[in-house]
Image (tube, rainbow, N blue to C red; front, side, top):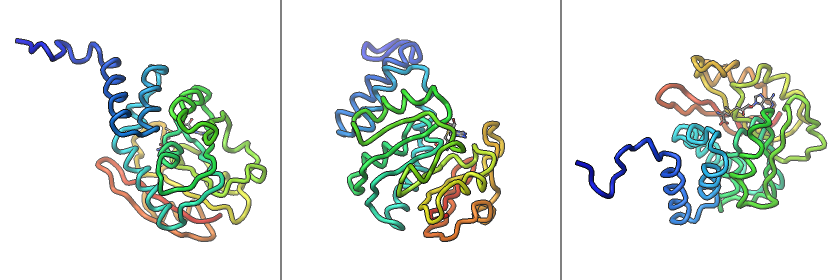
Length: 224
Ligand SMILES: C[S@@+](CC[C@H](N)C(=O)[O-])C[C@H]1O[C@@H](n2cnc3c(N)ncnc32)[C@H](O)[C@@H]1O
């Protein structure tokens, strides 16, 4: 027997239900980020936003946000996020009232993610931009970012080569992991020490490991 208030086939209206639910959560919480996710569900049904905003992804980014605040502080003129995907980390930073951030820019080589990142961050207006670019082809001196973030280190072939493009003294936040079995992870590390050696930063403010169920995430905050 089906109760009148229950859907008979839970999967049939998944998309519409998810939109209604997240829109309600946005209204309830007042979060511009959650409102952005509702808009992504409505406008970009092809985007894998459920994967990008699953609790493990959110956990790694909450960890990044908290350790950045503790080890470096709250004020940034311009943050550049490389391999920024749907722009979730910029949204989490711009949505956090503990920080004072002038602007956040998300760069990704995949042209399909730019419009999704714009939709997700539409509530932040001029403070957010998304651009399609290869992180190996950018001129980092002209970017004039006071923080460069790359939480996609496991996705890029030559981390040290990329770090070599940044002006000496650039402040950086990096994450990688030991999730070797995921086919798109082409440059995992087995330990925090291996990540530290791979990055070769000149100064480290924070180095840590966050164990998840299937893998461990590693993070370095420091300067090149
Ligand atoms: C799956 S996502 C992000 C995973 C990561 N754990 C996170 O959420 O921060 C990795 C992103 O890196 C991007 N990427 C890979 N190589 C890149 C490059 N050379 N320049 C810019 N973006 C790149 C991919 O297009 C993809 O959107």
